[in-house]
Length: 341
Ligand code: NAD
Ligand code: TYD
Image (cartoon, rainbow, N blue to C red; front, side, top):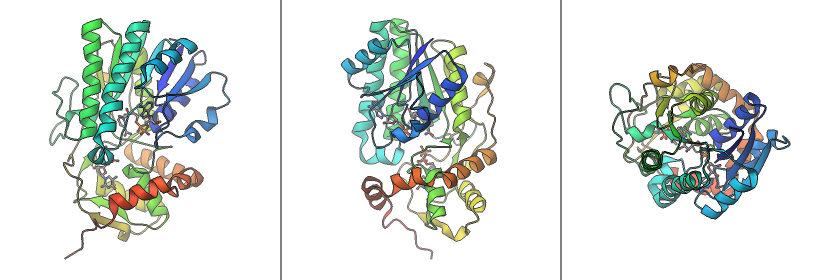
C-alpha cells in the first residue's frame, strides 16, 4: 500500500484518519475524495493542507467516471471508505440520500476496485447494523437487524462489500465501529451538540427517558483500529471496534455538564426519536487479537472532547451560526419539550 484514497475524508472520522495515516506512514500518500456535503468541511483538514503527501479531490462516490479518473490520475492502490450520510435523525426524514451514498456509492467504489485491480478496499461501517442489543454484545457473525434507514443503508453497503469478496474475490475488510466522539464532529451528533449547547447555556435535548446506552469511543482509538485492520486484517473478514463499555445518555450528559461547570437544570427531556435503538454493544475480542486495544476510557474520551470544543469555538460557531444548521435545529427540535406534570 502506498496511495490511499480516503473517501469521505473531509468528515469527522475520515479527517482524523488522514492525520493518523500521515503521522504513522511517512511513505504513504493520501487522496481525500469527498463530495463536501453539509458534513464535509475543508476546515477539518486545514492543518494538513500544505502536506505534499496530501491531495484533495472534490467528487461524489456515486459518480463512477469521476471515481475512476481520480484513481487513475493519482495512482491509488487502496480505498478506505468513510463516505456516507451518517445522521440517524436525518435518515428518518430524507432516507433517499442514505440509500444512494451508503449503498449505491459503496457499489460504485467496489466496481472501481474490481475493474482497476486495486490492492485493498476497506469499508468503515457501524455497530448499528446489528440493530438494538438489549442484552449481551454483538459478535461479527451475528445476524444484521438494522432498524433505521441509516443503519439499513449501512447494512446494505456491508452486504455489497461481502458479496464482492465472495463473487469476485475482492480483497476487502469491514470494521463496525461504535459511536465516536472527539475533534471535528458535526454538532448535530449528540456529544458535540450537548457540549456546544451547554457552553451557550442552551438546553440539552434528551430523547425519551435518556436511558438509552451507547459505547462512546474516542475517535483516535477508532482510527487506530481501522489502520490495524487495514494492515493486519484478513480479507473477507469483519471486525468490531469500540471501547467495550456502554454509558447511558443521561449519564453522558450529566458528566459533560459537570466537566463544563454547568447546571443540571440544562437537561431538557423531549419526545423520543421514532424507532430509537435502546442499546448497542460490541464484542471486540476479534480485533484485540490483531494487537489493537482502546487507549481511552469513556471519561478520558469525554474530557478530551469537551476540551477540544472549548478550545475550538470558531470551528463550531461557524457551523452553528449558518442558515443550514439553524433551519435544521428549528425544524427538528421545536415544540418537542416534554412538560413536567
Ligand atoms: P460525517 O457525516 O462526519 O462525514 C461524512 C463525509 O462523507 C463528509 O465529508 C461528506 O462530505 C462525505 N460524503 C457524503 N456523501 C458523499 C458522497 N456521495 N461522495 C463523497 N463523499 C461523500 O461522518 P463520520 O461520522 O465521519 O462517519 C464516517 C464513516 O464512519 C461513515 O461511513 C459512518 O457510517 C461510519 N461510522 C460513524 C460513526 C460515528 O459515531 N460517527 C460510528 C461508526 C461508524
Ligand atoms: P447520535 O449522536 O445521533 O448517534 P446514534 O443515534 O447514531 O447512536 O445519538 C446518540 C444517542 O443520543 C442516541 O441514543 C440518541 C440520543 N440523542 C439525544 O438524546 N438527543 C439528541 O438531540 C440527539 C441528537 C441524540
